[in-house]
Length: 336
Image (tube, rainbow, N blue to C red; front, side, top):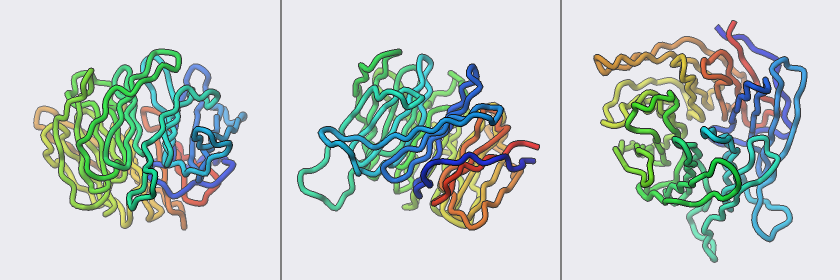
């Protein structure tokens, strides 16, 4: 179903972080941006669709009053809002927001770090663009910071702090189907496997809390009102987001899942784990019977590689890309 394409080389290898790959497709310019985190750097590659041109850029973690920061970056993700695209980078010190090509930093938010070191690490992780004009970012305390983003310029403001999770945020995702009919449009996950389901607005409203099983939920997606969550057990669970009804539980991988992704137009689901496997599934949601069906379609084995990032490169799932710990390349697969 898929075959391997030419890999894209990156300047530094990928760190072993959840969801360590972000992809932004820019159709008018026939370009795709990729970002991969390495320690205190973000490797950025822009690849032309004809495969002839690659441009590289590296972004360093920043902190005020320090020339070169050594603070580790936890995640880099593209946020697509109706009026603009931004690249959001989270680290142990704060949150940086750049123009999507990485050229200009438009906003910096410092995390509250205690004067004396504590047992609790401080970092930001989990990034999502939510309906119209919000970007949400999770922090290690379990709080979720909601930023109000103007259509242009750098007047980004912290509009709300959501304090529902008690453990470190691992990942979050907004409704990716584009449907305005879905009541819930944000799902957030934490280290205890708990999921919170939200409706965005002037004030974000908590719709549901789905309890975890003391096993980290490392990656989460939201599609047509269904929350799709990958866990450290290697399982994927599909919940009806608003009610918390468990639709399906898949024993997908033998080891810790690092990334799940959805191609919203086709209902394809991608899962990748420490067991070197990337799997492609197909989800069908039948609203009349309120049921979800999942079928396994395809496997790819990246031998001897701890996979840490996997993303579809388009909304149909025609191609996907994979990163692995200590690999200095982005591996691409395309439908045959």
